[in-house]
Image (cartoon, rainbow, N blue to C red; front, top):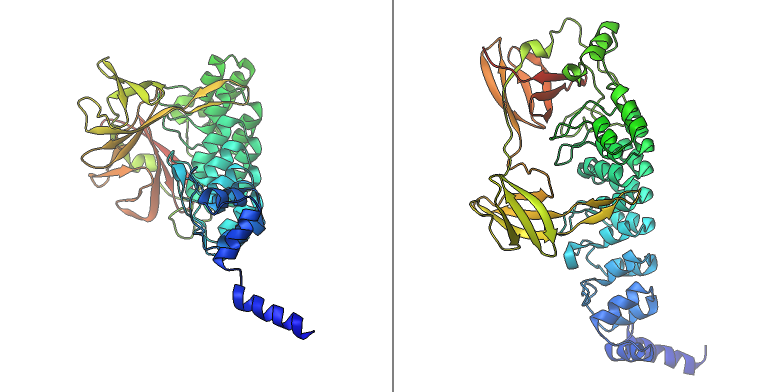
Length: 466
């Protein structure tokens, strides 16, 4: 190499260091018709212009700076599938979980736009899949809503607490493959929405034969009712899906105990045994329980030899379900109409307090969507915060909102003891320390429990203690 070339290289390294000087980098940006602004930096990342992004970094821009639209460069690149830029920004220690406008993150945007490779990369870099935007949606929920099955699969293993809610949305939107993935990753087939509806009810209400078949095969219980008392079959019939309604009304719970006598009993009196004796293994049986395998398979639980029935050892003497004495009836713009139990109707907006209640409106949001048949679905909400306790409650249009989690009082006749329980709570029966039970669901007149050791499920009917 000539002395002239060596001198040129030496001067270049001395002047620019590992990159360029700030002044020279800005000059290079100007040649590209770019200004040294946060908006142009984010726009360059959005367009996948790696050269311009590097010039911005050389010029000293904050890699976490947000544009006027509330996006960081990492968010913009992730949303548009610019994986090379994403890698460059991560190498520069860009904050992987930075939240921009409306609480969005790079992972949420990548999931929403089906950028699978970027979703995987961000997860490898420890992106938090459980962060929520201001609407309460996670990256998984955004992928489920869009039907991006591969992204759902990548996220489901890292966001297990969301798979139940995801299954409800998948059923509502008609995304069969997505629903199957969620079931495979531990979603409970009879998950409940705030109005008490299950995925099977949502699919039946849309006349979705494929998802109904999938859910029935996975063990969905067609005899369950929502808070208004409707079953999947009655919802289908109300919408004119007569063939589907007949199919659902003739279906029986997938895991009814196997003896002919029990099957005959179920046929004679289906309401009394809607969850009789044996149901599907809970898809999330292992959550919080040691030595329990989480799985998607269906299994029958078996009565332990010489064990007495739980229904003889436990009685339900009280069920408490408290609902707010108001209903959301309409949302228009940023105002909502609230109807009190007494019939009074009034309008509220963010910052207003519900009349006579310790709840302040924190947000009013219109959520309009369509099901797979193009029918409009109004999912508008009003978010509330208790001014004394800080508790948050969401009002969904036309749906009663529970103010507190349901609870039940159990009575154990053999010991004359009582115990107040809530959903997901574990308990033991006095005098029977060898078994542990978990409360799966509390309904207006029933408590569903599962014996953890063998997944045997029983329905406890509410009665009057003698």
